[in-house]
Image (cartoon, rainbow, N blue to C red; front, side, top):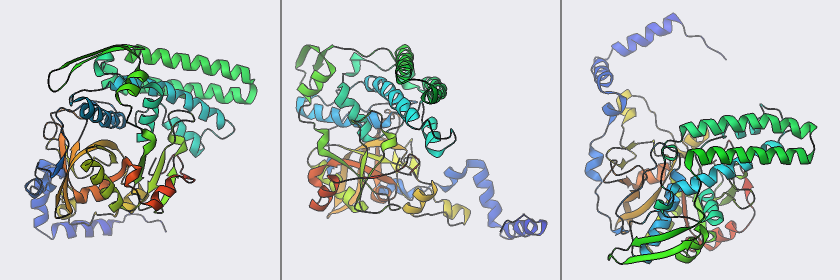
Length: 438
């Protein structure tokens, strides 16, 4: 039944609001300082410390600046910790621009494939619209980052430094997005009227243009480079004329991405079930985004075990919720909005995912945990927002925030139960591109 707001209702609303004299006091404070500042709970900073019972040896942090490359940064941060531990060089960093470049080329290719595969569907169909809406975007998943690394390798940050357009991706993203959408119209028409040869020729031309645009904006990736660094003991190292894949296989041979599984906690989906998101892949065939949905305690346990074994943990989360970017605080009670407005605004994790109020918006790395008599108190988080946020770039998270706003962790399969391991090796249920986990 549809309803129209009446004059009588509005009179009643204003009466109810002004009937309580405290409302005007609260309103003046909120209107002066803002909603979040007025709802800020100062107590949380007293409850969160910067001391952790388990902590990796870390120092500097990276900075993705104005880009959506957090998933790449977090994955490369996991790699650099592995490199630092093995080669005693904890501040070594990898080039994010290098992998970002190849992601643009691969995404364009898979975009064209998807457009051709759905050319018989209406332009405004949900799936075609999802492909078009994703054109030129930066966001991604753990499996997308590892697929790029396995295909193209990695290079040190100095071999392909950050550029303006890597740090500020809006301009390039808009240009590539517009181009891909324009190309989609051409390919859809060709699929109906052209030959296979014509389609392949046009697609190759389009991919060449994408390469050209990305090379202009980002610069071409190096084919070879010299590895040169000083370790933490100031010993000098030089290894000349390496390809990116040679570097990966020689210096990070122990890293096997096939040994990782992404555990997800999505209470709006069936637990103990393996899901996949085929429409979110960035590399044809080789990239398979697979998520094992389990109760949150399994994410906690696996993450703690991996940290105690000396390895950082990639995780996906909803960083915009209950967070103080400047102070580097992630606490589920940070903003008391329900108390401020006198209205119950709290939703369950499942309901947030069902309605879109919750989403996987950011990726970071766990590098520490603090336990007291077996109970998790807080987590140390390495972000990729530079040293001016948090404690020199590191955030602290209470465990309730983990339960509410962490959606994925990438951990070794050895931390799974036998039943969970069996599920990862079985068939997966495909989720659509518009699912909350996508």
